[in-house]
Length: 88
Image (cartoon, one colour):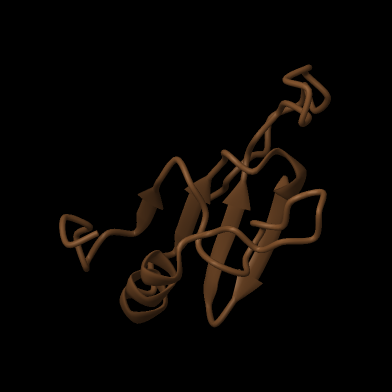
C-alpha cells in the first residue's frame, strides 16, 4: 500500500478496508487492516472497492466515503445491475 498517493482524492482497490463494507455472508469482516490504516491516515475523498459481494453499498467513516460497487452475488450472478454513482 506504499504506492497509494497520500494526496489522492479517490483510491480504488480490488479489496476493501477492514470493517467497512467487507462483511461476508458468514458475518466475517475480511478486509485489509493495513489498507484501513493507510486510508484512514490519508483521508481521500472516496475509497472504491468490490470483491466482497455481500458488502455492496456506501458508507462514510471518519470523513472518507467508502463504496463497494460489486454487482454480483456470492453465486457470481448479477444481482445489482444498477451502478453506484459517485459525485464529486
